[in-house]
Image (cartoon, rainbow, N blue to C red):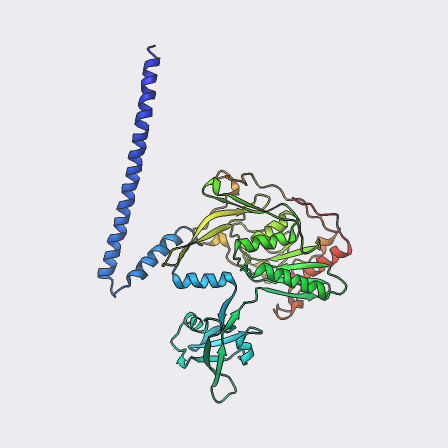
Length: 460
């Protein structure tokens, strides 16, 4: 009894005092937050009152918000109304405009290229043209973004351009009617009449539809049938998560595509493939490089983990985080990192990237360089990769990464792939596929596989 009484008293005290201590701690934390917010207010007032030039309150506050978000990681940020609208245009994949790719030169807007079958192409706009006036107002003094904003507009609305063209003594006046412009995110062609080459430049709302249309057209053009597909994701910076999932699903019959883990376990998600392979089992080579990021890495990782495709090239960028765009009514939006994504085997590629199954360098000089270009791991405040076990696995995909099934290829096929271009090989020219060493090695591998089909590939 002498022992039980003190223990009971201590237990009772703990029950009573525990919540009180927690409340004190919570109040202390809240008080500290209020003190820090007061600090922000003090600095804001000092800037307004004493900065060498008058400042705009909105600009100062938006810069402060952006600084707060960018201080978290390289991909979180604040978008004002104009930036938010531009982001929506990019992800939608269509906008009202003229259909010209432009840059800036000598203070004027210079045409890089008109897009086929657009108002600009039909009006005769040519590469190299200088746009000196928009609706009789000079373009000198405008930023490139301001000029682009003026050329965009509602479908059916009119615009006048004044153009200076080399070889023409007088300015050229053009009147154009804006139309819906859809930038080409899928480029496709037949290579040697038997291999489909499909390049995805980004993942917007038009990507998956464009991929299906391109493969259907190429299949029709290949009179003797296709032997394989090259899916080129080099220098594709990513884009919409749902498009990456749909593109992966197009080539998979079953199994997981990707999963995400967020701060709270209950927010974890997983996406699985549905029956139906638009490639009908044809062998696939996915080309990646250090510019392949985010959604590109989701596709490459899913097809690699299921051994549905052979990944070739060099290690990808390594962006394995998911950003959620959260609109702020009347004030743009914030882009906030809310989760990490994982390939079907449970790999996080954050700050590590997708390692190719077969490494092939684009040019010989790359072999002497320690790195081809900056990657995610080189960015300040990049999120760590949590496959190392420093953080507990949570959510629906709470498991260590599984080893990949072995790569099944015809005997000697991998050895015949040349890692480096031959000595004295022609420099890469984007208009000449024969100078693209990585592409040529992919084509050779696909034709070898077609001539010597391996056993059925493993499926996860």
